[in-house]
Length: 459
Image (cartoon, rainbow, N blue to C red; front, side, top):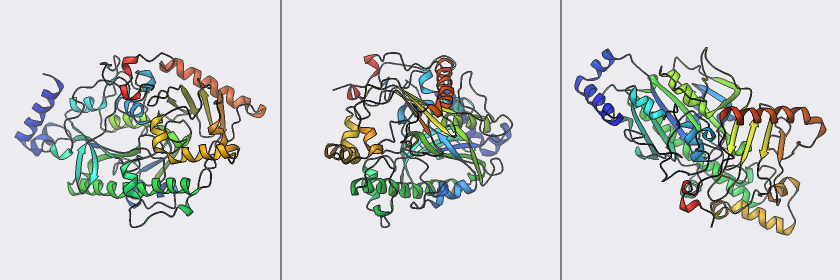
């Protein structure tokens, strides 16, 4: 009997006996609900943003635990989601290039398990959806850089057998640049671009202000839809026994955000909620990686971890605090690069393995969709950029970057060459070298042409 047949048989058995028999035969296990926001940093009211209106997510945070320093393992969706779905660094399982292995049959290494399969084999119904509003769920984003059969059982947790626990992913595309941003600027209450605080690496221009304001308006729309899904859970009588994790899959879909290892590309919101089990109103100040959500979802549900998993437990006596997090960027679309970062609470170290490749090497997706990139090019041609803005337009990247995040949260003052910081950079260099060796980082292996989708091959 294969995995799908087993799950259908189990679901049929449960449906035939009814919810009471299911509960009698099995200990009551919690449901697990992942609310995944595409392309957003912690730009929420509960994280201190005063322009957005996010009462539903803020309430979830007040009733659960909010992580102040949570990070994705990659600054773009497919490697980040490949890591999330396995609890492994994408660089360790050959899933680090964006939208790779679409048709070459690449599978997970021995000992690495797909999270949904673990839940299925434990009797859970698994679903994956994108919530489009008005109660409508459609098949959700997967975007894994490996081949996977029967990833999920359905789209809606309501499809499960009576009394059967579920693991559900609900995705929200509002913060992802595209049609949702067009709709965001049609909202009755829009954010005034004049009130937006621009990062120092953007020129103070109406184009930049409008772009950032639109992103924040999209988050307002996201919050409304998150509220609708949470209300749906309550209406089904499931809120008290459901572990909820709300997080972003990677950072902002803005210039110098998504696709880059600055905090704008990897710093994400993370809120976890389970009444009576996860402390309410707590702010966790330490470092967390999104793959820790994977490990913690299994542990909280009482399920065993697979043989190989890099994620760590976030709660309870087995909680393992991180001294640093590591993130990686490799090929994105047709743009080849190889970058790694180590971040502590105080410092960020970035190693550019291909410094000869500029930040602005050709990338059709960014050139077509990011108006601020066009603005930067125009201002560079006119010679009106300041030093912080000009750095992104240089013909080469520095081989190393070091930022003191307490003094320089926007990461514009590179301290890698400063004598006073050689102790810090030496320690972070060594930490990255250890991680590359210990994790089996495959970033320096050449990518086979068959692994690259035709649309992403260099033109």
